[in-house]
Image (cartoon, rainbow, N blue to C red; front, side):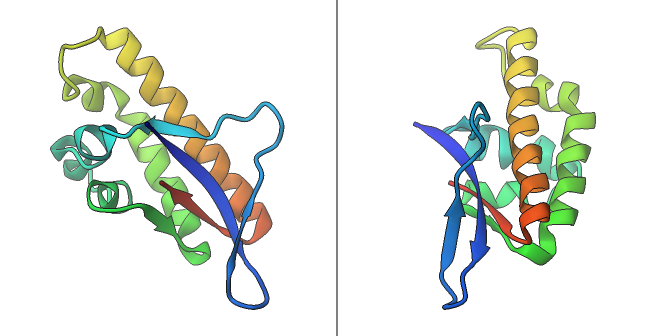
Length: 125
């Protein structure tokens, strides 16, 4: 199973409407095992991440008023990809880990930017 990232907006009745991604945009946010091995890892936590580690326990909902801070956290993790990759283990080469992590962070950041434009939030599940 893979984690997915989606944008949501609050409907007038208080429910959440999940927006479709534009054509050609990937919504993948990593493998299910990344909940603990990457997003909730000691390395990500040591960088000061406060959103991504929540995935170790449950799905991550970033409310509309938190999305800008979440984008900052995405940028923080992106700037430290090599450190995160070093903690991911030797089951694959560092190059493949770097590509996978960088592409998933790009997908998540893209969704967060779309959420800002829509006045909505982000969910990773």
